[in-house]
Length: 469
Ligand SMILES: [Zn+2]
Image 1 (cartoon, rainbow, N blue to C red):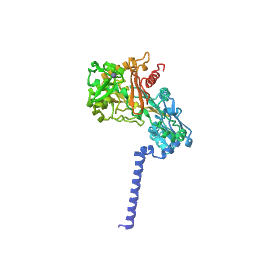
Image 2 (cartoon, helix red, strand yellow; image 1 turned 60 degrees about the horizontal axis):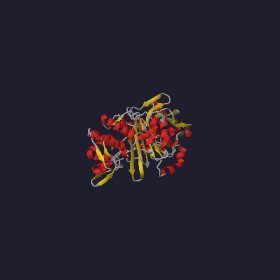
Image 3 (cartoon, rainbow, N blue to C red; image 1 turned 135 degrees about the horizontal axis):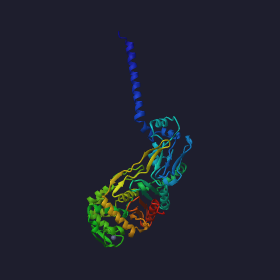
Image 4 (spheres, rainbow, N blue to C red; image 1 turned 180 degrees about the horizontal axis):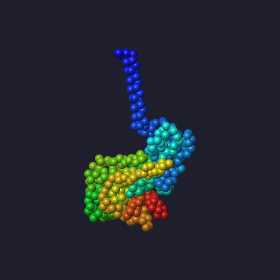
């Protein structure tokens, strides 16, 4: 006997049970599958609630020097940067009004303890207990960072120091800079953000400049890869070279030069001529193997070094690119990587800034592993370019980087630009037979590379290698 009323009640029963089941499945999906990405999204206002409950992890240099510390609790939670502007472009800032930048943004979840064990993450998210976030230990050496800042702060420019064998960034400075401490940052914001000196811009990783004569180490490598007999060929520098009716002037009259002597004296016509001999197709391929046109990843915003293929089709554009002028551009970070790749037998390592993440309770929870980014040239070619760069410092335009008792390889650069005096560049690495440190210094409108950037590079190498710097 069917009872119509009972049937209707049963239908509703099943319907409501079905609704509960769907809702439960949805909640499980939200918490388990999407929980981490939702809770770590910077658009989630609950992050600020978490932040007021959690003591944000600290940021330290490779020797354990505190670079960012949090004190207090609850709404009194206070983030401070003891070195002020030194790390503004690396660590960034953490402001309720202006948001987060740099490593504070890239490692927000780790610093808030949202990436620990499941139990820890859930207790942080639901506020079950007061928790300390995880600490970051950087590859940065605070002594080097401080010295680079001291040397560079009178100028507008950038300096990058790295270990060419691992890719660890030991120092990365961009000047001018700003004070990232919250109170000063917020009160000065209107002035800082409209300053024509652009202190917010990280010139090291984002500034694109013509690399000038530092580019000649790349042209030399591409030329040697194409023609192993190149070191035995000579060229007569008369002070100028005419390309399709246009005259390209050398900065001197160097007479008969070969690859090594042309790099030592930084002869423009030799390298313009070499670029033309390499030709559009092989020069373009060579630039690609060095990474031009490829995106670069880092925990900070980075400019990709652009590859303007069209300008290389034209002989004048090709010759200009071969000497680092015209439409060839690079960041100081990228020229440090190029320099480091020559130092490291032709292998460019992936640069990185964070060495370890440590849980204040249980210790190290993550350690970075050095990783090959690309092979830019063969070990033989890298070694030939290295020997030529040793000549630059021993008896060429780079003698300012000479350090008694230490073999240094280097290259100067003075990049012409429409804004005024040339940009001053210097790339170097040492010791030449087993490079531990690679440096790139660029000073905007600093004039000759040997005069301004060279001495800064020398002092950074001396300090990095504890050679009385
Ligand atoms: Zn010349």
